[in-house]
Length: 224
Image (cartoon, rainbow, N blue to C red; front, side, top):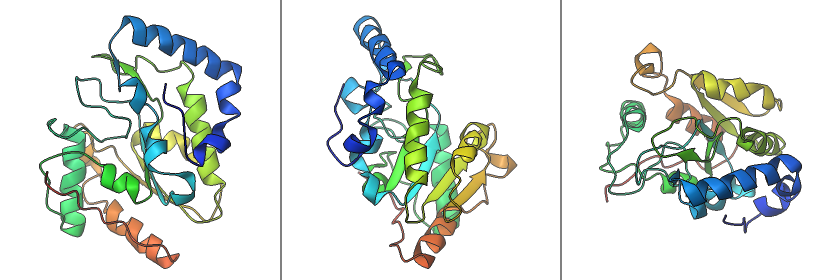
């Protein structure tokens, strides 16, 4: 598995030696050897690769990776170029259009957000092909809880965007009062109409970032 090379490496060094993680690592070795697992082994930590700790301004929490061929590449909600935009992400783009007027792009590749300080973190970082939640309860949640705790420790204010009950369950880890939490139903077609649409998370995020002296995020994903 890919090794972290930026400031996350030192912060998470201890985590990689803990018994739960060593057990998870052995499980994953066997899974990757015997089954089709997403994302690619070298993309597992892309959320951390693309968004160094010092640069984190926003966190968007997802659940587990997309489980269809060619979709997942280590960033929550994002898909590789050339892959159809999944329904939840399409709803995110629709809300972004209504909120800030961004056009809906022809791709769902969110690396541009990650490079601006938006940590696109799933709470479980791997999945079996075609089997949602198949790597739930194997240890990833302990690891990603630690990532959330580390972001909570930041002295600079961060926006946490929590869509749906699964993400909102992590609110108890965000104890630092200078952070800003935005909650709404999940953008999935099953729940988006219950309050995700119209929640304006992108303009709220940028207003807060500007208030605390940060550059706002350029949310427009360009056509490829």
